[in-house]
Length: 284
Length: 287
Image 1 (cartoon, rainbow over the protein chains, first blue to last red):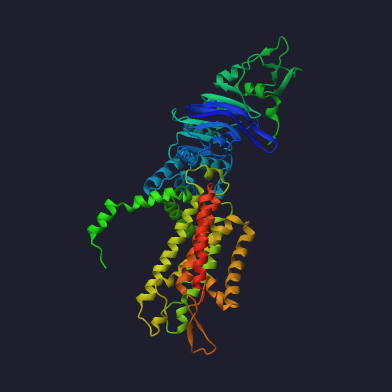
Image 2 (cartoon, each protein chain N blue to C red; image 1 turned 60 degrees about the vertical axis):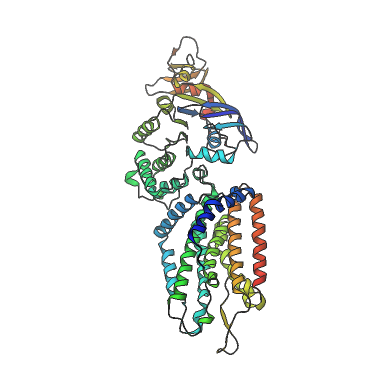
């Protein structure tokens, strides 16, 4: 396993972000789903070695992030895209990627230049290579962050909401890039259930700092069988209901007898698992 | 005296002084202490230098103007021997430049950068390389100017190579001061504190008490008595004054590394040794 997490706990003041979370992640793309404040970002920050847990054990790429030497070794083999890229506005795209490449210890100038060009092309930013970061759109900044994560072809990619702000074409391109190497371990957090369904070998649903579900997207969808139905009006047993494009009301919860059950999607199953919490604004 | 090459060969191959130094470095706990990866720091310094040259070209222009306007020696008048005083202006300028270049949350708290293998100490080390490189270039220019031109009649009044270190040491120290202020103070406070503090440092020590002049960052090489035709060397030791300045620079480096390091005990020990050395050098510089 590339990532092994046992009984992980992390608190920020009175707020419990991780509450004894246990998780194993192996090669392939694993999606992390959960409502705002579920602890996804905290988990990714711990795995990216930028945050130390209060208790529990973590092994990343077979190493302990708590040990300074092993932490540096993890960082050499890790690509991380945080929620906020924090790129410096005065830099051009190329300058920033080059800067990060140096910090990733690519000290050979010629090889570094080639690597910088490769990752910029990978995320379709070649045309903006000499554009200042402050003029980039949100989606372009996201791709810039993704480019830096891919520097050095890392064994483990930790991506926090990588597809936010991407247009449909770029989102498909993102899926293509992320899924290109099945040997690489990719852990991505997202709110886009369709990305999880299309991309992930495994999906982990997190809520209140704990794992609620772990399995394939198909298994997640199947877990909601018998809990999703369609009717003309909202039924009293529905936890969630919305009017679909065809005018019918799609509902999740305890179906009344005789209604038309429908095949659940990953999104339906996620909503069944997390319930109304999924619709609440961020708590943390 | 020339040392035969084979003696050097035997010295390095058989006795391996490098291993001896490394072993003691490790025994004293100094290896994890500095933690600066030199190849990365050098590459990063190159990136920063290029970026500063392209993006902050006005600073570059200011530097070139200062370079051209700063007084030079040997000159046709005695004033020329005080050429190193011009470095004080650069001291302030470099302090502000380093401050502006490294301020604004650069690297600190940026998660993407925090998750990279080059630690904060290496990133700070790149600034040492950059500032040290600049100081070295200035020192070479000073040497060329000092010894390259035709020597004037008062050649014996001019500083020797060690005493010339005052100028480059001020550049290095100014940069470190700016770096330290940028990492310790909020942006709007750092620049005024740097500049006002530095001017006060010189003003108080040079203006009022002759005895403590040598503890200021800049000391005029010669001074004029009441009779302007009589010039005398500033009392005190310029050689020790420069050791004192380099000690302050080393102290600045330790302070910057302390902000980046999780293993502070050894760094604090090193800081104590450097402080003691600097204090001794400062005391010996006094008349």
